[in-house]
Amino acid sequence: MYRLVLIVSVILLACMDQGSDQEMILFEETFDDPELEKRGWYDGSACRISDDSFRGTGCIEYEWILHDQRVQGSSPQRHLFEPVEGVYIRFYLRLSKDWEWSGRNYHPHLTHFLTTENSAYHGPAASHLTLYIEPVAGRLRLAATDIQNKDMPHGLTQGPLRGGYNGKFYDSEDKLFVDDKWHCIEAYFQLNTLDTVNDSPNPDGLVKGWFDGEKVIDHRNVILRSTDFPDMKFNQFLMAPYFGPGLLNNAQKLWIDELVVDTERIGPL
Image 1 (cartoon, rainbow, N blue to C red):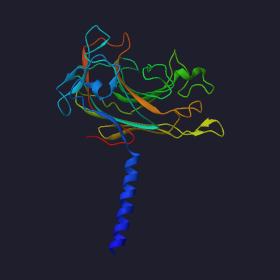
Image 2 (image 1 turned 60 degrees about the vertical axis):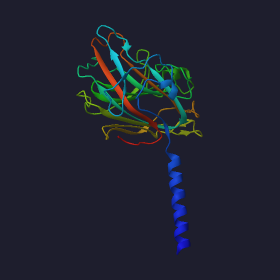
Image 3 (image 1 turned 45 degrees about the vertical axis):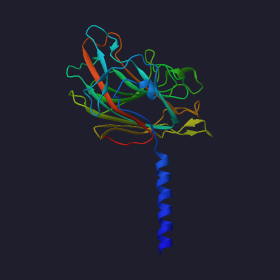
Image 4 (image 1 turned 30 degrees about the vertical axis):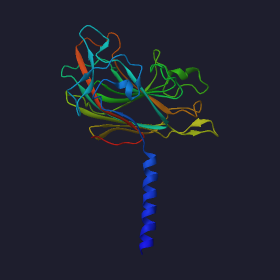
């Protein structure tokens, strides 16, 4: 009997180990101090830490000053991570009490994922694939663009060019950002597989989003890449709050805290 129990225990431990290998925290950031470069962040020139955090001693602060379209306080920041085909993000976001939207069905941009098909300093606007996680007009928006693929053999996967840009939007049905409280934002993206025999993408990619723990976006038949990119993987996170010129004329701030990039969903704190 003892030998049987021992064998079963070993098998269970092996299964647990295999399961833990499937999930991997790629990086995490509490923003308790401004020393982001020491923790793998790069391409940033400023970091303003506020003590009005969701958790811990600090959070990163971005500010827009009246009559100035440029973001102040903190600059865009990037972080590389181990290349993966499925990526999850969780962070806490707070918008200031006097927050105003752009008045259009776009902007502000906020956070992004890029892939191994672009360099470590490539801009998000014209890439082989850029993913967006952002609040737009009160809704949570997940989106994808790939306008750099317009001259590739299989062309664009995220819709036709419209005035120099393209993209597919995955918005929450309801307006969620209606106050100045901290909210938990989560998103998960999974690249679609490829049918190499027929030289075509399989519509099995995933785009999912959660707001304060409740799923508000769920798309399961998504195409994010073509057979032009059989080795594409996610490997870069870009945090770059941005309003386009002429889209904001208000003094306001936002704060981000407790950010985690993982291979699977871990949920709110």
